[in-house]
Length: 61
Image (cartoon, rainbow, N blue to C red; front, side, top):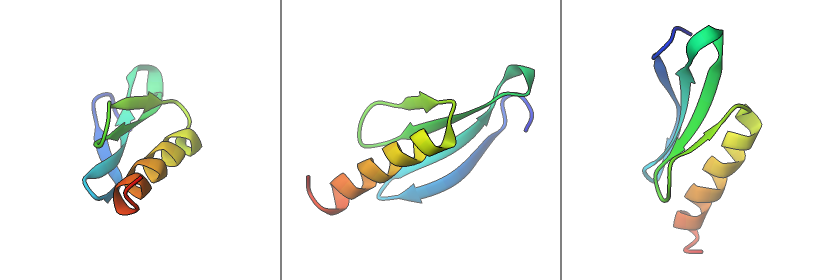
């Protein structure tokens, strides 16, 4: 993935998990929606945050 490229990995209830190409061939993951934008280096951490957010919306917690 090139610097500045963005790919939408998942979206549910207006919460998005994005993969972003960074400098030096690094990849970051962003969780956007239903709270502050959070950035992660690890996909599993980002996925956990993404799941938490959409479940809070779906189950009113």
